[in-house]
Structures are given as structure tokens and as C-alpha cells.
Length: 324
Image 1 (cartoon, rainbow, N blue to C red):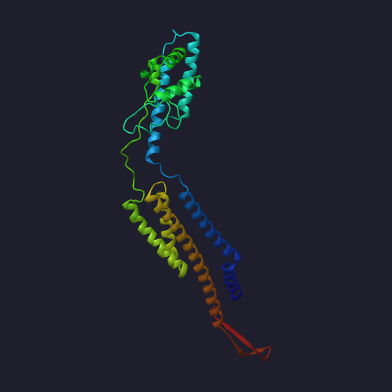
Image 2: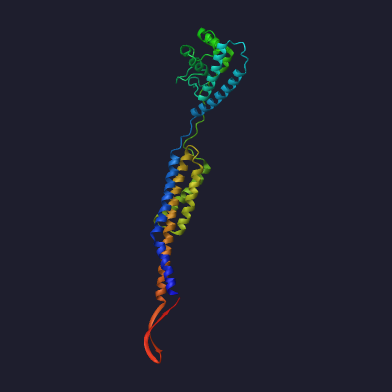
């Protein structure tokens, strides 16, 4: 029984100090470190929040697509029985091209009149309005150039004195009213824009970050310089809480996002240090227990000389006395 118990404890000690256990701990630490890098990289490489101009352009694009959808339905529903074959063919092409223009989603930007909506035949970037696009695609590039240079912000109804444009409309099978309906007004860039403070952190999140961040930082110091099972448990709990708090706010902008990145990184480091402390203290505890058991076995075993009678003959020997 003594041999079995000693062998079992020795096996337990060997298992605690086996290279496989070290590799397992190292794997856990590497996985945690990898998670830290991934979370930090994902947070730092997120697209920057959209500014007021981008938000305005997105809203304009949505509005203009809806406008062209409505115009498309109206043009297709009109009675065009009075048109000649050439006009009918051209009109059908123009309606299809208007759908292409709508789907492309590249519209002029009103970057000159901030206080009011204004039509642009061609904006400062060279982007054509819907009517200019249709005229240009049908071969009327010279008409577009002339209007863009002389009356770029005119409404279609104001251009009925342009002989080239009137001739084009007649050949296209479109009326002046339909052309005016196709031409939208482009909203100006808003003058009064509420720009969020990029450095501001919400009060609730600031308090939460102070709590989980402080606990993570404190446990990190203990687990690096004086690890114990208690500090490891506290550090792991605080680290996971900091990671969760950070990930939950990574989608936000400004100060909240920067604090979220810090929480995620600090929480991951605290969790790594906590796991290392827990594995280290556990291995040390098992080793100490094995050594203590070995010392107890040795101290409880005694050997003394003894006189025994075997077959009516006295014999001198040794007596082993051990406590289990």
C-alpha cells in the first residue's frame, strides 16, 4: 500500500511538472495574446465616423433615387401614341438611360449655394445632372458644354429659349414639362451643423471604465509581481469585464471609441496575467503538496534492530515500523 501511494503521488508530481502542462499554459497565453491583438487591430482599423458632409450626401443620394423612381413611373405611364416611330424609339432609350443614371448613384453636389437648393447642369467635379447625362449620352455633348458654361444653374423651363436644347427635346419625344420633372434641385450643404465633440466620453461609460479599468490595472500589477490564486481570480474577472465593456462601445465614435479600445486592450492584458498567475500558483501548490507528503512518509517510518525466533532458533534482524 505504501508503494502504491508513493507511486500515485510521484505520478501526480510528474504530471504537474510535465512539459505538456507547460505547453498547455503557453497555448492559453498565446491564444489570449492573439485575441488582444485581433480586438485592438479591429478597433483601430475601423472606418472613421462619417462627417456632416458625408451624411448630407448620403441623404441627398437617397432623396434623388426616390425622385428618379417616381419620374420613371410617370414617364412609362404617359400616353405616347402621338409620337412618330423615331421619337418613340428615342424616348424608350432615354427612360432606360435614366434608370442607369439612377442606379449609378453619382449625382451633382451643390457646393456653391449653402443656403438653398439649386439645380446644377454640371457641378465643380464634372458630375452631370440627369438631364445633362441624357443629352450627353445621346450625342449632345456640345449642348451640355454650352449650358454648363453659360447657364449652369438654370431650370429647364428657363432654357426654352435655347434652340439646340429645344430641338433635342423635340427629337427625344420628351416634353418641356417632362424634362423639367426629370431635373431635380440639389440641396445645399447645411450651414448650421452640430459637430459632436470628438474628445467627449459619456458620463455613464466614463464611470464604468474607471471601475473596470482600475480593477484590471491593479490586478495586473499583483499578477505580474506577486501572483496568487486570489489575485488571479480577481484579475480574470476584472479583465473579462473590461473587455466586454470595451467591445460594447467599439461601434461608437469620438472619445467613447478611444476609451473602448483602451478598455479592450487593458482588459486583455489583465486576463492574460491572471491566467498565468492561476496556472503558476496551481503548479506550485501541487508541487508543495507532493513534497510535504514525501516528508511525512519519511518521518513516520522507523527502522530498529529486533530479535526473532524462527524454528526454535534465535535470529537477529531489522524491524520496519511505518504509519500510513
